[in-house]
Amino acid sequence: MCGVNGGYSNDSGENCEVRCRFFIHAKLPAYFHPLAAYNMNQHYIGLMSGTSLDGIDAALVWFERQDNGDRPVIVAVRYQPYTATLRERLRAVCFTDTINLVEYGQLDCLMGQLFAETANDLIEAAGIDRQHIRAIGSHGQTVYHHPHGQHPFTLQIGDPNRIAEHTGLTTVADFRRRDMAAGGQGAPLTPAFHEAVFGSLLENRVVVNIGGIANLTCLSAGSDSGSAGFDSGPGNTLLDAWARQHLGQAYDPGGEWGDSGQVVEGLVSQLLADPYFARPIPRSTGQEYFSMGWLQNHLTGHHLPAVDVQASLLELTVRSISEAIHRFQPDTREVLLCGGGVHNRALVRRIRERMHCPVVTTACYGVEPDWVEAVAFAWLARQTLAGLPGNLPSVTGARHPVVLGSIHAPGTPFRH
Image (cartoon, rainbow, N blue to C red):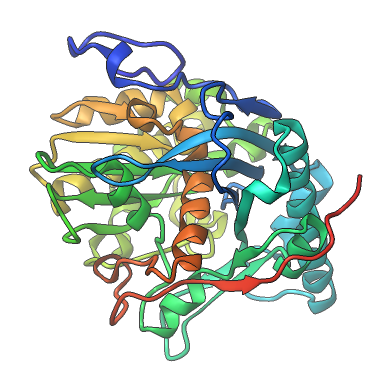
């Protein structure tokens, strides 16, 4: 099966040289797929910045026609990390109930410019003519996601007007709010892409994206669409926050620190007793809910070594993912991992230990795990321009399928 740290393993006995199309690699500034660049049909760019607040993922994609549907082929990718100063500014406004409107507006402009520059750098490095790029799909940076109450809403920054103006390319953005207008939660949106690319006619699969929040897509065999998708709970968010506080690092590399601690069963049980984990689907959440404040409330009365708290948070992510799979699709035949969490070796190992089926990465099906969400928003932009729905009502709870996003006409290309 496909490994999670580069290369292949053959513990399942399958021929991965045939099955896998990409090696997993570390996030480098730019990467090219040598076999895809020759195709000069219309390409799409996907831009994504997730709840981990680490940087921008950009993917240049074209879609290869196959008998069972169009398949994405990554031509080039680029990762633009945020500076420490920008990360702190984003953390100050993201996932908090009160923000300064001037700071919000300035960050919206700044992020739009940064998204545009990242797209321009990707295009320049790929050496592709802009006339071959149909559009950009930009998720933006989520500031707040509140899918409940009388007036549910979601906010993303990264002004798409600036992206369109400074890249000279049609830009599709603001994907989530149309689903919410149709009665959905506006999240998760990637399951429609997962179904199109990773679905099987023969077996039930689950795609697990481990970002700041972990979200699952349960793909039933041959489904159009009996798929389910939802946020299982925290992915990396609490692990990263605890590492920042106690290690002075952005994250726990490989999960080694957490893996060296002792899991405190009482704490894990207390955390899993939170009502969110018992909710039916559809459901979605964010760092507004699973925050350090949430964790500190549960730590009241506990006097634990920091490393044991990290070990327990690692176990929280593992169990909330595995128990959700067992609950909502118990006959799963394969689990596909993607997102930054695939680089946490301890996390991946423990998920494998709790599952009774193969656990691989999306690299085994042609899309490297670091780039799945960026490719998904390229696909969503393509759906929008084709006038096709991008949501799955069975996932978001919307009343019906809808065409997602707003379309921003191109401007004069930004000149470096």
